[in-house]
Length: 157
Figure (cartoon, rainbow, N blue to C red):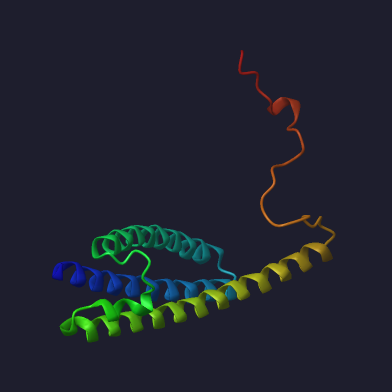
């Protein structure tokens, strides 16, 4: 059981590291948007996607460890209270660090989202000012125009 406690602390440290990296990527995303650097933005988005997959793996590991420890519905803030006295301080510090890193990430992600929205509104204004057709809503919609006859192929041929 002692090993489960230590494993859970190590997992919390990994989560903190990942959140720090995600916060850094959110700041990089803002910088790329401000510089109008679509290549850098694409690279950051790819890195974020990879980090999200890694976080999903850590979440599955966290759920497994919680089950092993019998803490299925235990809120994170209450975790240190369930640790043995010799590990309680370390658990409290790990939980506080994770919570701090999450708040930093949340702030950076919100700022990045806000920066992206502002730039998208600017793009919409430019498109509307140049006589372009503005999309009815967010998201991708396939073209409704049929390709020219010369571009169509008959798969039965």
